[in-house]
Amino acid sequence: MYDVLEVLRQRNPTFVVETPFSSRLTLQASHMGGTRRPEQIFDNVVWDGVSRPTRSIVLVDDVITSGAHFKACQRMLQMELRGIAVVGVFWAKAIRID
Image 1 (cartoon, helix red, strand yellow):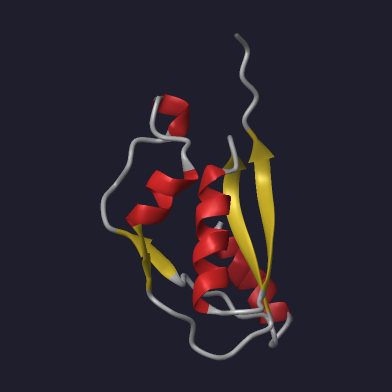
Image 2: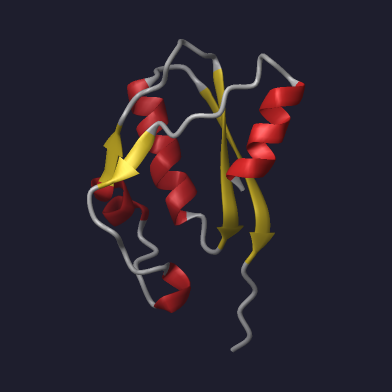
C-alpha cells in the first residue's frame, strides 16, 4: 500500500503521505475476533502529528471490516486538527459468510 501511495506522491507534488498516529499495543485483527468497538481502538491510538497544516486528510486502509478503525482515527484527527475534513478510502471490503 505504501508503494502505491508513494507513486501517487511522485506524480503529484502536493500529495503528502504521512502516518499521523501509531498504536500503543498491537490488537488482534477484527476478522480474527478482535475488538470492533471504536472506543477501545481510540484508546489505543497515539497522536504523532502531521508535518504541516492541512484542511483535509484522506485515511487509506487496506480493508474495511466494520469501520471501527476509521471511526477511531477520524475522531482523533478531528480532535487534534479542529475543523479538518476527513474521508476514508478502502481498498477492499470484508465479506462475511455466516
